[in-house]
Length: 142
Ligand SMILES: [Zn+2]
Image 1 (spheres, protein in one colour):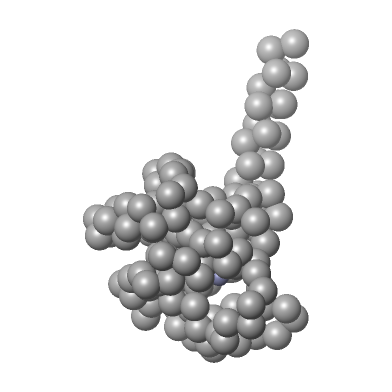
Image 2 (cartoon, rainbow, N blue to C red):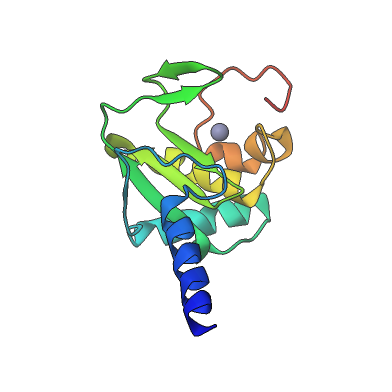
């Protein structure tokens, strides 16, 4: 019996390590990093403007080299600086954007507003002053 329990525990451990987090495909090129202290201030900034609050410490941060191209809607683009998987609390950032506050705040807001798209209520409100929305405002929540 004890051996069976050990085997089950071992299988779970392998599953967790081998499985890429509830549907998030962490790119092979990605490496985890500890967020710099300034990120906590940026988190407070975005909590303040959005009036939504979350657990900064729950976010798992990864960086990818600039040569890595994120995919969005089926195409790969150099213009995508970062991606957030809000269901898994994962933010992945290209290296040269790691200290670009408006981009990091944008991704943080995705964690605080865990829905698909960019709800205007948050992304085009007070928060627009402290984050980047690098697409035209077409009046929708895209
Ligand atoms: Zn976004």
